[in-house]
Length: 397
Image 1 (cartoon, helix red, strand yellow):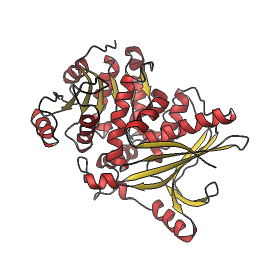
Image 2 (spheres, one colour):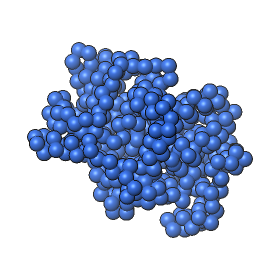
Image 3 (cartoon, one colour):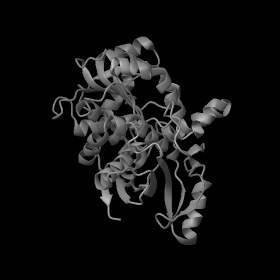
């Protein structure tokens, strides 16, 4: 059963990886061990004590920063990890290769868990295998606590809350439209996509799950959803739009949030995500180029453990619009922005704040396998706005 009397509040599992380092650097700056207002105690975790010590020294962490050595798939080692910490923050992907045993260990031990997963087939497998254990133990397992899918999951939640407050209804149609995006996607994201496609091509049942917009809502199938895979002129915003590479995971998480919250968005809820490419012939050409872009799965993209420089991360940003409409035709617009590149700079801040929010703010969330919106909701929005460089704002029509 769940216990809060442990040595650490958070262990960053994968602290020697590129994103793991960024998470540790953020925790050092925002929540230094022994002197932060939240009273958080955190440690760096990984497979090699030597590498952990080297990274600790390279990033200028205090020499007394705790190091936790864990063999990522060994049950005894994982039990030792979950015995020592209230929450595991893991950046070690692809999760379908390296996450099964860790999720199971957290679910059975009552240890909270957050990750950066964008692998819907694996997530469904984990829900089927571990949700009952997590509910019994009190473990809160929260997938997708980075760029996929926090800005989108929470953007839709905020829009629906505003629609309810203003008109007393839910928006049964929401469009997610990425207006600006500067920065690279992570090597881990690319590796996860490749691994997912390899596995799905070998298994027809996995391919069916991958294509199903309701793959993360066991027992519930909503109305047909837009595919979002072809360029089109979007009359709602007066511009061309093309496919958005993260839509396949974000849309699944948004539907799961609606499902877990008891369908406050309605059982007839329709949601899609696309990238805004502009107006006229140029906008159309850019939309077509997006539809034909295969760089995410290319072999010359970033590898796991690689990433952009600090200057590149700091120069990155993103801006997403959420346009909602109810059955009576009322509309609400919500904008969400981030002040760093999506795949690394902003993601590392989002997952760190998710871990803190789950422990400090979302204390009444029960055990189970959750999304960011269903587990932490407006509490996480407030923390991200205060600390992580994100904005969430209702926009004028």
